[in-house]
Length: 353
Ligand SMILES: [Zn+2]
Ligand SMILES: [Zn+2]
Ligand SMILES: [Zn+2]
Image 1 (tube, rainbow, N blue to C red):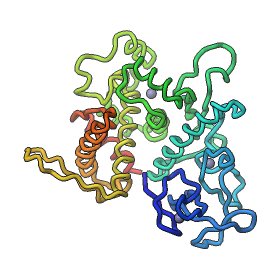
Image 2 (spheres, rainbow, N blue to C red):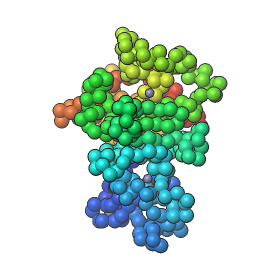
Image 3 (cartoon, rainbow, N blue to C red):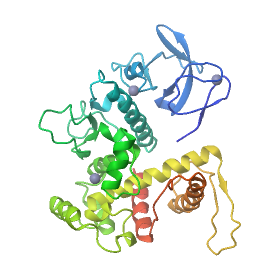
Image 4 (spheres, rainbow, N blue to C red):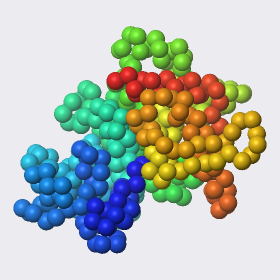
């Protein structure tokens, strides 16, 4: 993610800020320019310092501290692009739901930022029932009385997230249950939206389906049976030579979603590194230098090799920093050569559009 700065005092700002903590200026996120902008009260809304002649208000979810995106006052919607995708949110009368939903919104806004940076279609399912995208944020107690837990997943453009995943204790419990090295809200979003874009970018595109199968295998293998087998027997031995995670080995669709999620992980990390101008030197005297300099915006970098060559040293350095603080590795994965090929496919597909 970009590091933003206050247009008034140049203080660095996070993507989620609504106020500059140094000079007190009110700020909001402007989708058209992917930037945080300083706001001036005008015409029962705000004008921008850049004076583009338009007036804005905050997205309706700003009242819950769940969004800082701006909406053009001439727009018919009171929600921003990211929030208009919400189909169901949990009941906010329960305080815990509000706390958890806010964390979910942080992850979702970061996801939508990335999708828009790639120029991917982000279309509200209300407008395009067949092709659109929507989110259901549900709690186990809110969706009827059949006691079946809410399953996080994707179906025809509708992504469901169990809001309990926003609770760090629950999430860590699930992570251990599922024997995963990593489990986060942003990880869930990136994975599930991968399934959605598989349908948008690959399904029913004859040539792309062929390209996909050459890299990931034939997704026409029975999905239900494949998952059943995965949960009964686990991943095949040596899965780590071919897949980024054990779960990715279950079926080509899951392999795709896992790989897609990792591609978004590495782009976000590299964008952050770029805005900080991170440089990692090589003084190890080994044959494979651990060296990178974040000199490009990865969203607009057409050269995949430049991306992967920067990413690997970056994770090595960041994992080492985390270990200095006794924290688990920030990127607890090893990317085998076969997965680099899959990441390259995701990259090429995103740059084809
Ligand atoms: Zn400021
Ligand atoms: Zn919003
Ligand atoms: Zn999946």
